[in-house]
Length: 148
Image 1 (cartoon, rainbow, N blue to C red):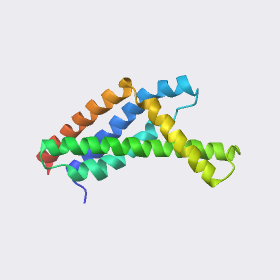
Image 2: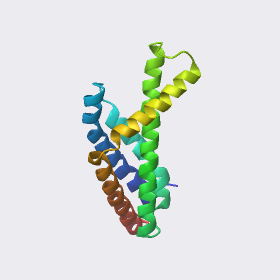
Image 3: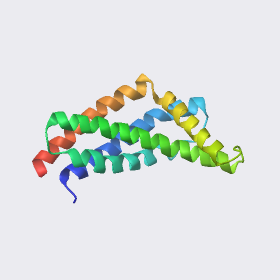
């Protein structure tokens, strides 16, 4: 059932994921020299889904609970973005015949996941993500209380 909390949670977490994607782009270009054109829109789509399902479902209680839901939504968004992008890179490498089999490809995906996680675990990304998640959680709770 659509609610104001789910709508606002989805929109603002999509915006936060897009913004964090833009913060990550220079780090990726420096290390890999890869094209990053779809990074922010795909991250925003994942943020939209996580904001709707996690943050939106928890909106309408207390502000303390909404901060917890905001941090949980951030963690889930980061996890699924890392899974998506490491899986995407693994598929590209698989098509280039860089893996010997399916298990080797999954192992490569796990290694990419950890490499990307280490890459984004810097203050320039983590601090804005945490502050943004808390602000977005507050905003979602504020509008969920006013419109529901």
